[in-house]
Length: 271
Image (cartoon, rainbow, N blue to C red; front, side, top):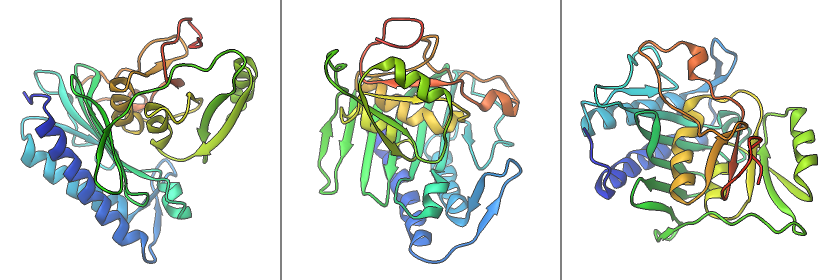
């Protein structure tokens, strides 16, 4: 059973950075794009990052199973203590293909359905977010400095909400939700960076309607929660990562959710 330590967090960060370096090697040249069975794109960068992370995690914690977007078939469920690694080797493949730099490497450690450790690396932007239960959340900047981060309190009623939205996915329900929120400014962004900006107080909220997978959110949720924010469904329940053995594709999907920089108090996930 892995202890949730800063040493473990640092080891996972190094793995994510190695995967990021492999991604950037592909990013800086021409590459081909395949389509998976669900019509989502796949590149050699996704595959290279997966290999690095999977091999590294097996060496680091051989007793902990791995669920990766690029290898769901090998996952047979959490171990006897309820642990498993949840990995998106390249989150934001569409942004990677568009070459807009907004893609990340996501690695989370799940314990009994909760993300207790998370690392998010944005290699093109040279940004790193990391968090571990009991230790807090941090941002590592381009000069290598590690800084504790904290989510912001909600804006006053007369102030403008800083809202983040998906760059590659749209949903008609978002307009109605924003209309009920109040005065807002909406900034589109790709990948798990949206949640990380809420975690560091640069945005107030990120609502998400439409399908996402567990590996899209696990690492960033750990960062948000350790920074004092919340990631909840629209029934005000935290996203859960509890999985049965041989999980079906439907069980690997999240419900609609919202990332708040502070506490929300009603069933609709609003303050």
